[in-house]
Amino acid sequence: MQENREEISGVAAFKIGTQVKELREKNRYTLQDLAAKTGLDREMLSRIESHELIPPIATLLKLANALNVSMAHFFQDKAGSEKIAVTRRDERARIRRRPHHLEGEVDYIYEALDIKKTDKHMEPFMVEFPVLDTSEMVFVSHQGEEFLYILEGILEFRTADHVEVLNPGDSIYFESDVSHSLRCLTGAPAKAIAVVWNRT
Image 1 (cartoon, rainbow, N blue to C red):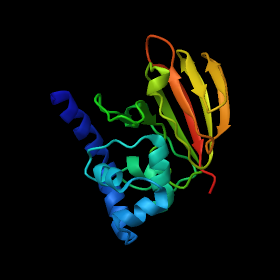
Image 2: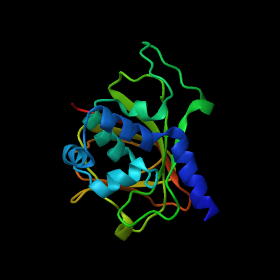
Image 3: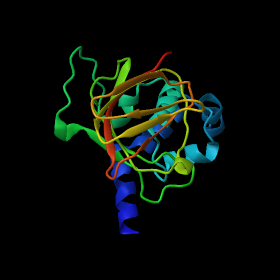
């Protein structure tokens, strides 16, 4: 139970839920309005705003689009519009999924590698993927394109009719509107650099 509380407080420190609520109210959206704009469940949005649910990257992207901000907005204390932005290693925003996530939630750890530049077209992340059975895989889709470069472990990329096994040094570029899922095939979590481009 203590571990669960620590996970929640860690997410609350980034104020993701608070920022979603503030942006929603600034745009004069109800939860139902935001649900309609994102395609997300109203209850899920309520749980994100109250810091009960940690949004995965695909969900953050949908929220950022609907609220007219970049995903970096959720990880920073103040906006940065400089042409060059440096994020030091100890400044990176690390989001860890709770150990007892609900069925149907994506289960991985991700770090925002840039938290300073808001006006950008690419969103870079370091992602750790856990070992999963095929029955545990959660498929997601969203606008844009993605690039993954595998650093450690063996990662399986799967769509409804396509499977690729990726080793360290391999990379994959795909259109994100294709329903897709990823899982680690080795004993320890696989790590990858992921760059998400929002095509809007």
